[in-house]
Amino acid sequence: MHDDIRSDSRAPPAPGPSRRQDQAERWIGMIQLRRHPLRVAVLAVLLLAAAACSDTGGKQEEAPAAGANAGQANTPEMTVQMVTHGAPGDTFWDIIRKGAEAAAAKDNVKFQYSSDPDSGKQAQLIQNAIDSKVDAIAVTLPDPPAIAPAVKKAVDAGIPVVAFNAGIGDYADSGAMSYFGSDESLAGEAAGKRASEGGYKNLLCVIQFQGQVQLEARCDGVKKTFTGNWQKIYVNGADRPSEQSTIAAKLKQDPSIDFVVTLGAPDALAAMNAVKDSGSSAKVGTFDFNPQIPPKITSGELQFAIDQQPYLQGYLSVDSLWLYKNNGNILGGGQPTLTGPFIVDKSNIDVVGKFAEGGTR
Image (cartoon, rainbow, N blue to C red):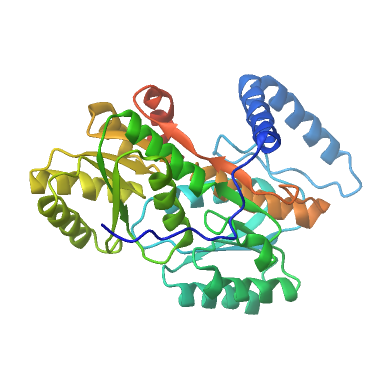
């Protein structure tokens, strides 16, 4: 049993009724657009006609192949640098990049991406972006004390910054205008509640990178709502064979563990292999999604996945910076814009799974 590690005390409280209502209205708006593609098409034609008749006389470029794009913006090209803590080989970040690239194609944005799971090196990548005089930066904040000073330097240099995916409790202090991501504490609570409803008694929460605030918040959220015994273990998420063997060793050492929660899709695959290696009968649930997850849910090897919609995080990060640069808009109204949690299980995997196959969920 490990000591409890509390999530960042500066993290905002769970959304009250007004914030939940605001989120619901946003979801309804998105659903209505999806249900009325003709309206979107008509709007796009009108915008194209207006652009053709404008003083600039600029002709809109033909729409890119991506279905999310309705044409390219007739605004001056701007450069957006995205800097994340993504580890090499983690397919989660491929989904974020697809969303960002779709928005960039629509908005006439030159999109650049860099990442490093080491916080000091991630901060240096932000400094490199500042030195390159990019127009805007989108950044993750998994280790605010190490990364926030670099964000403040960017803001001081006149470069607008938005945060996403990690750092929901610290983005405002860093100077970032907006935040796009899941409320990780709420996501953890959803996972803990689901495991409790399944009748499990001894839960192991697996953290793949030590010191990242969003991962600690997930595990702490699980502990808050899980009604049985809870413990956690740290593994090396940059080395899948090592991660798998560490989880297997823990399951052998403590055969009472009947449920394992991992905090990333690749980590879930490692945990499922570890269950087999150890001869354990434990079940597995996870956070996040990739194309390998749907068949595991369908087969029953994986009980659920808590999705934070990374495609949407990437898309909104780039699109919000374009909106700010071209129209002074700031999304969120001073509050985080939530993209999750969203529970995926056998009840809805048929709907979500087809998008995962295309690499956008």
